[in-house]
Length: 542
Ligand SMILES: *[C@@H]1O[C@H](CO)[C@@H](O)[C@H](O)[C@H]1NC(C)=O
Ligand SMILES: *[C@@H]1O[C@H](CO)[C@@H](O)[C@H](O)[C@H]1NC(C)=O
Ligand SMILES: *[C@@H]1O[C@H](CO)[C@@H](O)[C@H](O)[C@H]1NC(C)=O
Image (cartoon, rainbow, N blue to C red; front, side, top):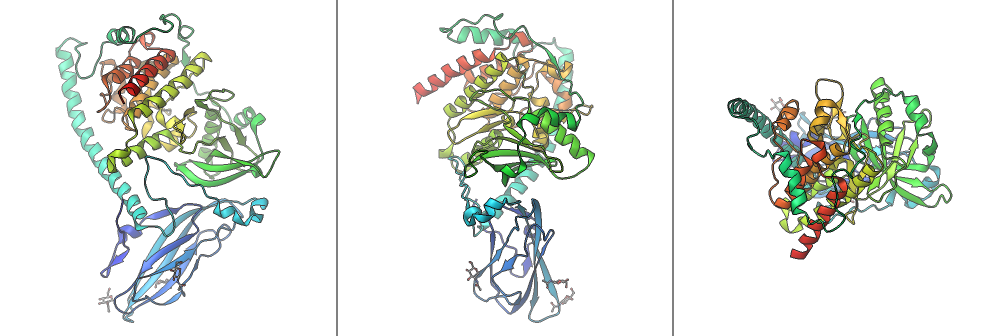
């Protein structure tokens, strides 16, 4: 995005721009403002911060009272975290302007947020610490790095995103209304004709399984339908009520000292929780440190927060102790008394797969040449299928496979992770169907939705939806279907539409993951094989 965002122009104050409370990345310690006036304008400058323990008063390199320069100039505001505590600072820069010595004052408030982190003693001794450079470069994301001076384009970007969200929201409402009308019509049609008519995208399930057997060259080990998972180990989805103490006791053996962890930027933020980029100091050699994801629940000492912490600890253990190159299990926890518990996982520098795909979509819209290739996307799908195949062999049922629960690095290596905090970080992907449990309804197989049955075949269903997410670069599946209608919609044979540009062969793979009968869905091992052949064929054409 290239453009200019102004706060005041031609005597008009842009209140919309002033209403934003922008987040200052933790490695940025200076803000820059450009200003000039055509006639005599006097100013008074002041700062307010909400926690003087975490941050020293900001310093500007202009005097706190004076006249706005007549030529275009820049002033600088320096922000210094004290390093004494972890805190999200809200700071306000107040600029009072008076025109031609009149008595009327125009008050402008510029709001910023900044994370300040507790510094360890040894870091405080290293003067270069603040300047640690974590450049994040992705081939398909070409936003200017948020650097000083903050280009107006970054602000325009945030505003554009806000406006887009508003527009999308409006469109969603309109679609929802239109959809309600069409649903009524479909119901009417169904009652008049025989069921099973292939309306829309329904595909009789017998046909889908046949597809895989007939069209997939089976020159490797022939897979018979009985050799798969130990005959559908069904799991009921009962979240046992665990107390915080019990949850902490279960992770005691991987607990480490909070002192070894340094938090940097917030990568994702929800209502209750956050994911940070952090550093973990090596136990034996304190000069070495490695990068980690840190999941933490925000600091509110009430019951809701305790429930969130318990859930985070419990769900973080889903992949614990498993070793596979396409899995990312929990590595450590910090559960010291009096500190907020934190969960640590190894770091992958491009972060969350769903957010990555969405960035790719944005980048592609701006510059089609930077589009991520179909072959790369299929390669990601193969890696996810490999990880899931390992889980199935170990009889572990994931129950929440989706792009949001995968991470990716700059070599396009993808790893499946647990769903701790996902409900909070991706609230649009989860729905309560009348009870208190938030479920990933749009990723769930019919038997899971209706009977709470989870099994490897229901993970295969979710894999099909994840494959669809890859091919659509992070779109929401069944976006125009009411979550309450999902079960009926699936029962009637409807499925998600074939994405534009998605080859028929690949869509057929997704479609067989969505067979109504769990036994008819392919096994992960078959999916790996089938996608690998498709990947090779794509390579042959390029
Ligand atoms: C700006 O004006 C308001 C209202 O007159 C006053 O309360 C505030 O202290 C002023 N701020 C500065 C920085 O002078
Ligand atoms: C304040 O800092 C900005 C940017 O570093 C510089 O361009 C400007 O000249 C400085 N102003 C004064 C009065 O020192
Ligand atoms: C000051 O504000 C008052 C009321 O808002 C307005 O009537 C008056 O014209 C203003 N004076 C100047 C000099 O702008």
